[in-house]
Every structure is written in C-alpha cells, then in structure tokens.
Length: 425
Image (cartoon, rainbow, N blue to C red):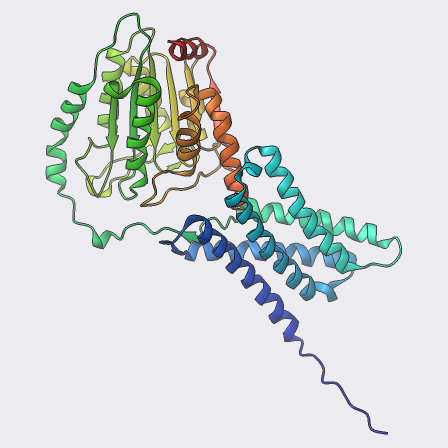
C-alpha cells in the first residue's frame, strides 16, 4: 500500500495572506478617497504612516483578545478576513456618502452607520472563534470589548484622512516675492480698504465684516476670504462694509497682509464705524495650534496671533456686538479668551481637535464649506446654521474615518437680541 504525504503548509503563508489583506485595506481606502475627491492628488507618506499605525493598533487588539480566550492559532486567519471585510465596508461607506449623503446628515445617523459597521466586524470575529457550548458568549464578549477599545484608539489617534492629499504648489515653481515692494504697498492697500468702508446708517441695524486668510502657501484661505465676503454681502448686505486681509504667495498684493498690525487697524476701523444697533461679523481662517492662529507668510516674516493678543485687539478696537468665526485646528482654545456676553463665537474644532480640508487649490476647507457654503448661504441665522454645519461636518468626517473635529459654539447672553434685530430688519 502506497501512502501519499501532503506537503506541510509553510508557516509564512498565513502571515503573508494577512499582510496582503492589510495592504488591500489601505488600497481600498486610497481608492475610496480618490473616488470622492477626484484626480490631482497623490499618495501621502504621512498618510501611509498613519495607516500602518492604525492597522498595528487593530492587530495588537486582536492579539490581546485572542490571548485572553486562548485562541492565538486564529490570529493570521482573523487578521486576513477582518481587513478584507474592512476594505469592503470602507468602499461601501464612501460610496454611500457620495451617492446618498442624506444618510450622514445627522450625528444620530452617523453613529448608527458606524455601529452597524462595528457589529458586522464583531460578528465576523465571534464566528471565527466558534467556541463550543456556552463558552462562545464569554469569548465573544472578551473579543468585542477588546476590539471596540482598540478600534476607538485606532480611529481617534491614527486617522488615515491624509492617505490621499492634494499637494501644495512647490515653492520652487513660484516666483519669488518682492518683500520690499510688498511692504511698500501696505499703506496704499490699507488706505484703499479704509476708504471703501461705508459708514453706518444711524438707527438701522447693519453688518460690518472682516474676512482674514492667514496662510500664504495654500490658496484655499484666500479663496475662503472672497467666498465668505460674498456670502456675507448676499445675506446681510455687508459688501460695502467688509474689510479683507489675506496672505497669499501667488497674489501677495491682492489685499493687505494678514498680519497683526493690519488686523488691529482693521478691527479699530470697524469699531469706529459700528453703531450700537449694528453687528460685526469677523471671520478668520488659517492653520492653528492651541491658543495660536496662523498668520504665516515666511518671506514677509509675519508672526502668528495668540488668543490673548486677539482678545486685547478686540477689547481695544471698540467693536460692539459680534459674531466671530475662527476656522483652524484647535480653534476651540480661543473661546475662553474671546467669549463675551455680546459675542457669538464659533470655531471649526474643539480645543484639542484638528479640522480638515486645508489644501492648495481647494475652494473651501471642510468646516468653511459646511458652515458658509451649505448652511449660512441658506440660513442667515448663524446659530441655526451652526447646527446644520456641525452635523454636516460630522457626516463627512465619519465617512472618511476621521477623528471628529467637534466644532464649537459659545453664545453670549446679550448677543441674541442683536442678532434677532439684524435678521428681522
């Protein structure tokens, strides 16, 4: 009798299959972001690093869970099937977000979709365990708890939102800035803005506006300055009472520099014209850090704005009731400095969170698009527009697997009356 021996399976094959599944999940995420954002971007090294870190955290969670239930033999198979499932789910969620955005319009719907995705993944893990008898309940509970905990860490701290990015224009391809001419033009540019600023009409509630873009190397901020100014004019008739400041490498003298001196003067000019019945609407967009707002134009040697400095500028300007929108990462850290009874302060993110969408060539940041283009353009009351925008931002971030930016709003006790008066005029 002849016996045929089956060649043993190489121990490396399951590991290679698991690694291939992880890489496939990255490719699926990249393809989904490309399909949503369109061509023109590129693979980001930073995004790849985040994807590696996120996957490592999930695998570590599986290792811990399987060690606790005594089934380490399932690790390679579980990693393989889980990441294949994640690839399918990510593509499905991005497709839903593009084709049926109404499913992401409220935080409740977003939470429901995320919970459904997690339940499908947990069901796969429990099915793979196939523990006999009643042991499946204990093993399944252990795996579910460990998996959800590590998945939360992975999504919160290792976001893959930057896997596909739109590159900034290369500095080498840009014409050098004539810094001497730039500063020589500031008096003329500021004088033109001041001369164009219409006076108030006594007894008539009117809106004075300021739109500032702080970062020169990304055109999105200049784009937001102009787009927001147009929306404020359409909604409140603020066009003739709008001050624009912007740092722009591509068009450095289009508007006065967004530096601290010009900002302080612009606020003072508005404060000198604003009547007791009027409202100031101040919009600042740029990059940010905790208690710091970017006023970045490296060739012009501008310095960033601290929250404390901005508070002093507002206090010294004589500006009365105001809506202040700060769109930047960690912008919520400005609230404790600039909030006041006669101010409505809105920020693109909580004090410990980043916001998204700052890239060269884009028309809007994610928050700017949600608040101004989708909400305020339709609903002139910024309080109501904020609620719409917060839900829209949450939906976009959930679809992209991003850590929630959690936009903030702080309404002073006296600002509501002023807003109502302006809105009903």
